[in-house]
Each structure stands twice: as C-alpha cells, then as structure tokens.
Length: 338
Image (cartoon, rainbow, N blue to C red; front, side):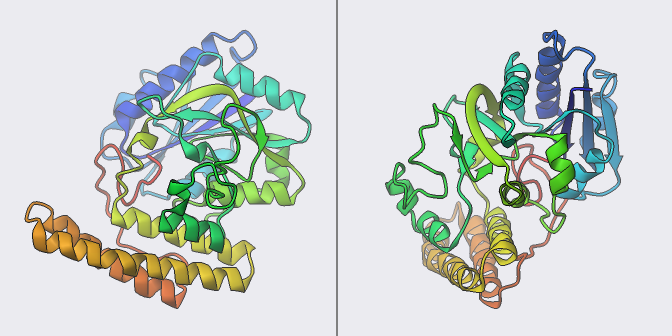
C-alpha cells in the first residue's frame, strides 16, 4: 500500500462528499496510486446523516463511527492504528484536491530523504492564498504581534509577521515550522518514530505540536507549492467566534507550556489576558449602540472575561462549554471542520 488517507469529520456531509469525490478522482486518475490507496473517514458522532448518505457512494472507503465527539487528535489516532501505507495524508473534509495533487506530493517526498512532513499551497473558496499554509512556532513575541495587529500591518516582515512567515514567498519551496492540519502528508516511517497526535489538544494545536516533534527528531517540515488545494473552511476563518478564539488561545498556551520555557509561557499568558481585556470596551460599545448585534456583543464580553481570568491563572485549556450544534461552516466545537 502506497498511501493511507485519514479524514476526521463532524457534521459536514456535503463538504465531505466533495472532498471524497475529488480524492477518488485523484486516485483513479493516477497509474501509480490506483488500488494502492486506503481511505479512513472517522466520524465524530455527526447528527447530519453522514454515515447513511456517504458509505453507499464510496464503498471502497473505510468509515469509522464514534459515539461521541472525541476531537481531532484522538480521532486521527484511531485511524492511524489501522494505516499501513508508505505515506500518510491527514486531510480536512472541507478540502478539494486537484487530480495531480497526490502524485506530485508522493514524488516530492520520495525525492527528499530529509523531509518529515509536507504541506501544499492552499486557497480559500475565492482563490486567495491561505496564510496558514505555512506558519512559525507560536511564542510570546509572535503571539503579541498577531494579537496587536502588527502582523496584519506588516505582512511581509520577518519580525512582525513571524507567525505566518510572511517574508517567505508562497510561490517557492521552504523549510518551515508548521504546516496546516488541513493537508499534511508524512512518511509512515517518520510517524512510527515521532508518534501520533498528542491527545491533550482537543482542537487547534495538534499539527503545531506534531511538526515541532518532527523537527526535534531531525526531520524537515517543508512547504512546497507543487500542488494547490482548496480549503473551504479557510474562507470563513475571518468570522472567528469568540469561543473559538478562546480555544485557539488555550491551545497556543498549552503548546508554549509544553515546549518552551516558563518565561515565554508567562509572557504569552499575560499577552493573551490583555488581548481579551482590551477588546471588552469595544464590544461593550457595540452592545450599547447596536440593538441588532447586542446578543452577540454580550456573549463576546462574557467569553472574553472568561478568557481574561483563565489566562491569568494559566489554565492551559481555557475551557469552554462545548455544544453539539454545527452550522456547517465553523462552530466553537469544530474549529477545523471536523
């Protein structure tokens, strides 16, 4: 078996159908991969009828049903235990592949013995490059520049835009720190040495931790625009809900606490708490002025107050109440469309 593909899904039936259709077409159109690919779809207790609708359409794919939402890391690890391909691809259900994506990526990894992980050029639904295709490791400085908006003001700066590695041309191949979990290909031999996803991360941060461990083990993490994919969920990333921002901040703090020193963790916690505190006056004004958005503003204030106090106490997860509701694009429980 050449390739094992793992997709974690949660209430994204129609997104997943598009993804699997593009995946199937890429496999069937490849002389190299035909009959040499296994696909595992781990469903995290979807309530949209995914497992009634999709298995008859993709009978050669393996569907795994969970009775509860186990999160992204744990669900991926479920399928990893069954994978036997030479290469592993972790793919989001809201992605669409080109017909030559898989062939190009496998050829690239076979040509680079030093490569531990590979990411590609991702576009949103409008054809814009998604900056999360390549990222730097989060730290106190990178978090500060991102939260204060300096990264947005100086998108090509090596210092201010270090989180998105804005100084690196997205049209060229580069060793980077982090790849997006929406499309992450690796070699099974590398994964066997580095281990699976850290299940402390329920959502966000899993690929950050994994890429860090790749690099610590001496492997290169490479962004290569040898192929393009569409990541539909990325088009909605600008409409981040406050609960989602809380979970993202918690995952960043967990990563820094796990891999960095206590000074960086202390400053990152401080910056995070100040970020939430500084946004409260704005949302208070929205609540007073705008009747239409009052409920949203009040909810945001409540979440940001919670984030402020939890950041100060250093509680690593910045826990929020998770709900099973899903709007088909992004929710506080399904950050990455899983």
